Amino acid sequence: MSVEREHIDFGYVLVGQTVEEQIRFTNTSGSVLNVNTVTSSCDCTIATVTPEQIAPGQDALLTLRFTAPTYPHVTNRRSVRVIFDEYRSAPTQFTTVASVGRAIRVNRGATPILSSPTGEVTLEAHDGASFRVIAVDGRAPVYVDPGVDPDSPRTKHVVRYDFTDRSPAPRYLHVVTDRADDPMTEIPTRFTGGSAAPLSASPPSWLAECRIVHLRKQDTGDQPMTARVRLMRTRATDLSALSASCRPSQGDATIGGGGTSNPAQDAPSAVTATIQSTEADPQKMREFLVDLAFSPRESLLPGVYHDILRLSLPDGSYTELDVVTYVPDKP
Image 1 (cartoon, rainbow, N blue to C red):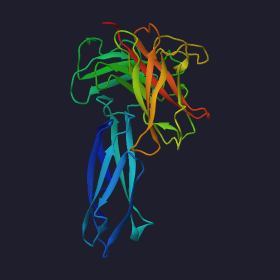
Image 2: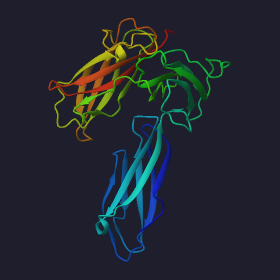
Image 3: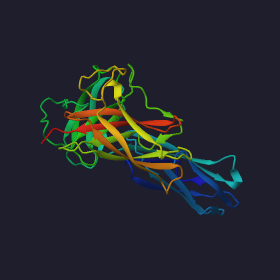
Image 4: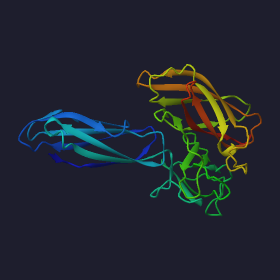
């Protein structure tokens, strides 16, 4: 078997975007090769081979279609295996890699995961459009260049962050921008000193497609905000009795607001959640769509708030998600 290449780099791919690459290979043996199976290490990558019966000396195409998952700012590495009937014990293997992100790219050319409690973050528009940074960790942005006009939109911003007054440290650095297609960018943190208690699920197979729910409060009034959550691999379960509850992260929902970090202290969440409807996804087996309404706490001050949403059933099974609510300044 002669293979054109074994590694595919899709480059920078926006969340939800689908990209496609093809690899040509040739049957250099003296007999027909029959494709038995083509497997991928993730449902986000679909691989097919045509034709499935390859004569000696004939070319075939491996087509790879990658759909970027909803968790951004990470490098997605996957493997693909082509198994032939004639060589079942020796599959042909390929690897794919993609940098998953959103409209605002984080730390181009470097790891987007923060490994220090203080530092700098580079935010850059993937499409070259100008934008403004409204808040970093719930506070006014502090720019590396002190001469920067905070109200001036630009294609690139370098801002500082500081978690030294946050114990335990949060799971994400939240950056609010004025871009409608990327209003909230969350950047994972991973450094010594601890982090907020991880989200959990019981059983472990009960997962959500995206573990972060972004909400933006209406500029006026206390109208509920809505969001749809996809639950995956929940087994053949009746979700008619599913319930929702919210609790503040780290004992206080306010991000960067100087609130208590004592998880045991009784503090109100920024929002309460109500399930509007649940339905099985007709396109995907054992996946469910849950529509929720989030009501903001009365008289929330402008800022960013972080709650934990728990979706649970009477049998004790549950899954948890982050809920980040941005309350803008009144016009």
